[in-house]
Amino acid sequence: MTAEVVTKVFKQTVKKYGDRVAMRKKEYGLWHDISWNDFYRRAKYVGSALISLGLKKGDCVSIIGDNCPEWVIIDLGVQCAGGVAVGVYSTNAWPQVEYVISDSESKFFFVENEEQLDKWLNFRDNVPKLQKVIVWDLEGLRHFEDPMVMTFDDILELGRQVAEKEPDLFESRMEEITPEDLSVLIYTSGTTGPPKGAMLTHKNVTWMGEAICIDNPVYDTDEVMSFLPLCHIFERLFSVFAQITHGYTVNFIESLDTVTDNMREISPTVGYAVPRIWEKYLSAVYIRMSDATWFKKLLFGIALKIGKTRATLKMNFKPVPFYLEALYQIAHFGVFRKLKERLGFDRLRVAYSGAAPISPDVLHFFQSIGVNLIEGYGQTEGTGVTCVSRVDKVKFGTVGPPITGTEVKIAEDGEILVKSPSVFKGYYKNPESTAETLKDGWLYSGDVGEFDEDGYLKITDRKKDIIVTAGGKNITPQYIENKLKFSPYVNDAVVIGDRRKFLASLIMIDEDNVVKYAQDNKIQFSTYKDLTQSPEIVKLIQTEVDQVNETLARVEQVKKFTILPKKLYEEDGEVTPTMKVKRKYVNEAFGDLIEAMYKRKQG
Image 1 (cartoon, rainbow, N blue to C red):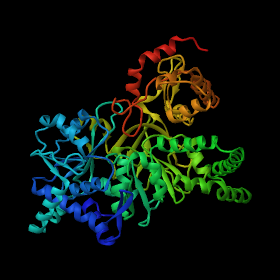
Image 2: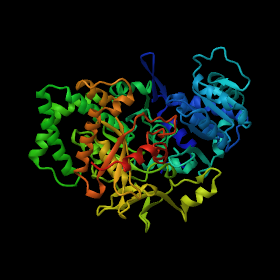
Image 3: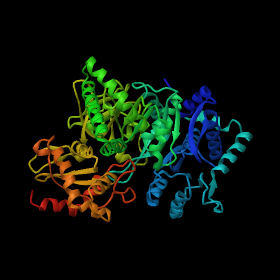
Image 4: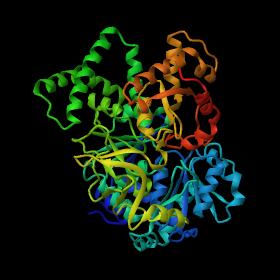
């Protein structure tokens, strides 16, 4: 088993791989390699500098910026120096950044660029415990001077000098760290209130870095692409904790605008993303096929039918007849192989969806075209993963069995309870919330679920989200919402109906696909609001809703819907950084639209 302290795991991997490539970053059109030795050297300089500036064991250090090698180098440097690394979403507005800096009592704050530095300038007088702010991208800041601000180059140079004068300082601090010491603070997205700092120990993260790769192995020859927020546990697991355990290569995207281009360039062997990303890829395929020639549409339709038939058998653990496997291999060679190359999925051995529920239809599609997309389940408080499907045994509508070493049971009210070495220490400075979530060693997840006959877990809903209709029927909105989101024209949906006579839904359209539909059908509009209120677009969405209703029981059917006249933004508090809609906020903000649906007569 791997060592139970991040520092020891990191040192072991550096010693093993030395000059092999640990990370890659693209700059000015060229990919630049960073070796394990260089990774460790820079992390050592960061840690040594922080110790010399007064970082004590257990002090918090915050980091804000987009995914890049510097982010991870700082992260490891802080942890190796005995500090607690605290990630902040780069998209957070300054009051949200202030909240994390203040709540964590951070002593140092690493910021990527001028934009992030400006956020600190808004609240600098409100965080007296903050000692230094360090900037790593100086574009636009060449002539900026402030006694509290240092550059990343300054930190590296200071660390180099400290390491020369006191060569044992960094390593001796590393030796002081114990498995029960805090490794990171991860602030939850806050879908139901202010973010809470989940305390993850060195034992938590090193155990998970090993455990997630036991059931679905990764290899030191693997490559991943880092683009989800690094302060989220999902990305941190693959870009940091599993990487320093298994020694594979992390490739950092240029920007969020180049994800699809970088995917084709890198062609990772292990993929992972939130459901919205996989839904976007699926929509892109269908939209592209809508513009194809009739012959290509025919070929794709036949190939997909073969692929879906095969995937249905495999995902129900049934044998695939020889003739069907032969037909699938022909379909793969003639259609799916080229499609995967265009998407950058041609080398994918396994791909994960996590952080939110994904529609079984989306999983089915990717399994049909030969992309081994599987769903995992967990939460920050359990260091990210509780259950995951196995590569060769994926099952419709489930998140797989518990990962090796994790115990899961269902409480009397259906709540999922978790016990494993990955269960967190509690919420930072919040004993009340900790006591509600941790009871007798069990993590109370807040999710409702059940096990099937094969020991696979099925998530039915969030405990707080279950709808009880006026007729007393219990409805799980996530199931219906996932069906609605399968439509290429629906970006998101919020189903309403608690204590109501019927279910209704707020619909957020997929702008790109709906705009294309409007252009193809010569539908006039000038603004986003015009588009959402166009009778033709309302009719389009009605058709999509009707198709979903045909698959639902009468009590689950969406009788009315309203298309939201505006886009939802994280900055406005409407969605989380991982693109989950804040249900409570949306229900309050659009209460007038909801009431209007229930006042209208049913058509």
